[in-house]
Length: 333
Image (cartoon, rainbow, N blue to C red; front, side, top):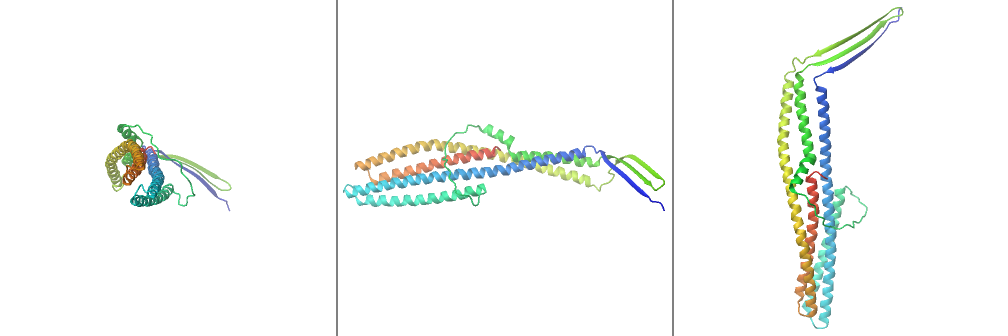
């Protein structure tokens, strides 16, 4: 008997497909860029949420400080009223009125402290720290004006917004998809090579061949046409969404810009109001101690000062949040 053996090696290679493969690579690359922009968009929202929670926490922290100052002021006024009553220079109603105001200020302090605790919980949640260790934030709200025009903000937004970039990349990918589907009517050029041998104990036959093939898509059941129509329809929808997105971005930037300017104006006005309120407290306290002012006068002055400080703190926090919102709207987070 003879021992027979055979082996073969086949090689197939795409030679030219009229740019179909290149288009597919471009589409995948654009899709990757779009996904990265989407990730940036989500990250930007997370960063803004943390900033917002942080500034709200600072606002609550400073509000507690103001509430404590107010308690101390009413405590001092209560002690003065008591001392004047004991010397017979003031009536009992001054003491009871001061005591009521002191109690109300303590209640306001309790509310402010609870607001601070809630702000810390929200900050931890924004940072993703469900069981955060104890920590202390020593920073306080401050004011540093940001000089930027609306035109500059809009320009930055149109250039940097990740959602605009993502939509642009998706649009380009769909345009490439339309071209790719149109090339479905074109042939594909490919080549092949084969080598083999067949033999036994006495003889061996070797053979090889090389070929080039041009494959035409003669009939695809109109699937190519429908794929082109679908890609065009998706492209038209995306273009409409892109126009809507640009309008929404413009509105978001303008709104954030106006909020920033409004908060800046409130800060400037708040500084003046706080200074005037502090002067009124000193004047009212001096009049009261001189015996020419009433308890109501000094109480009103202290309440006005407390409200002025709280309003100023709110304006500082609103300004920082508005700037963070404008940064997000411009895609600069």
